[in-house]
Length: 525
Ligand SMILES: Cc1cc2nc3c(=O)[nH]c(=O)nc-3n(C[C@H](O)[C@H](O)[C@H](O)COP(=O)(O)OP(=O)(O)OC[C@H]3O[C@@H](n4cnc5c(N)ncnc54)[C@H](O)[C@@H]3O)c2cc1C
Ligand code: SF4
Image 1 (cartoon, rainbow, N blue to C red):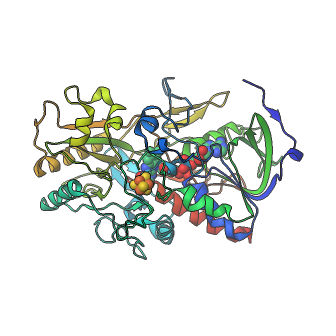
Image 2 (tube, rainbow, N blue to C red):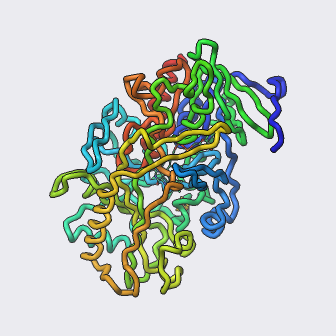
Image 3 (tube, rainbow, N blue to C red):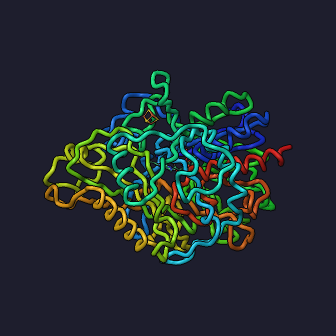
């Protein structure tokens, strides 16, 4: 490895800013968009670069099997096993690859919720404190949906701006079947720029490579297209890409971040700002704090509570393939959700979780998990007959589930899942519903329902490693997501979650970034 040289500040255009935002994904990109019109000098630092627009964007062999856009890093699990995390370093962060299911946490998720394996703690703010930001985030990110269709939906102050996405025939049949059984499936809220009333002008062409793929035609509402590029139209905003922040330095008192140390092109550079915001994703933001340990902060920056890196959550997630006799060629599956098992009640002592559909799916998606799948049916055939469901159960914060770094700064992710009984029960409920609709068993010589747990490397829903709260000895961030221990350090990625709910996290991260953005605009004056 070549040595990292320090580049003097003269070599760089400008090194002093009002605000530095580290990471350009759901949190950082949204915050940059919010702050851009203020005229303040803003530097967005991103370790990845622009995803090229190329045919491979939509090629499942390239994206899923060859890992063309994978991060290429390796982390360790709690037993020292190496794995490649399913995360992406790019302008726009993981939203370049997300399925754009943009759904609010339920109102009850902001309070304590009793689960089979313990209590999910309350958030230090109420749903009402975030509601207007949820609405703004939904409008900003082109969310399609239908108010009132989901019985667990929390109150909203405005309708969706875009109508729900229609279901293709196979999904429509399943939806009708669920309704016949008395269930209440609802149109999944999704952020894509689709205009079904005017297909010729629609940016989105409704393809089968959305969830897990970058959008070749720039129609997915991701943080690059929706926030970073519009922010960069303001001359006060600058993006430094291919620039990895390796540590943060503080003043002698330890109360302010005074230097953001970046590794770029084999050189180290130092950038400074009145306000520094970390939005590297919940794992990398915690790792950055731990790598920034100093005499003033021996256990890592902002870590008086000892909570930095702890309480890592990522949801208990499974893919659940329902294979039937019916052949279908559904392109965009992710059009319905089911929250009938979200809360306790109606015979359930504990909450089970959320069900939706996977956005993209083909033989190569199956091939990635082939050993567990069909020995007697070609994967191509199976993809034509299967409907891929996605099940999410809340995982509870556990201080032993944590991010640590070793002397060289490498990440270890220690995690033991909890709430698995509730997750298994959710699978039983889904199987019961589908069997009752028409997915008769033993149509083909293998299990008709094929569940597959998402492994540790599936860090897509990472959150919780720097929880916010009022007590500096039990939380890392205050209610404005400013580190208790520092006057000018904020965090706006998924780290701040004190509990994870059982819905996809991105909309909550975006809404919170808008909330913190309002606070920062007040502070900047
Ligand atoms: C395949 C896939 C599908 C998903 N589908 C959904 C979905 O349908 N709905 C949903 O709600 N969520 C979904 N998610 C999760 C969603 O993408 C994340 O919750 C969200 O992007 C997290 O936002 P963030 O700001 O915390 O981090 P990210 O969006 O991950 O952004 C972090 C950024 O920081 C950069 N970075 C990291 N370390 C450094 C460093 N040291 N220096 C400089 N830059 C750094 C990274 O390169 C990245 O750009 C999905 C994720 C994946 C991978
Ligand atoms: S479904 Fe639409 S938004 Fe998604 S990748 Fe295809 S064209 Fe892009």
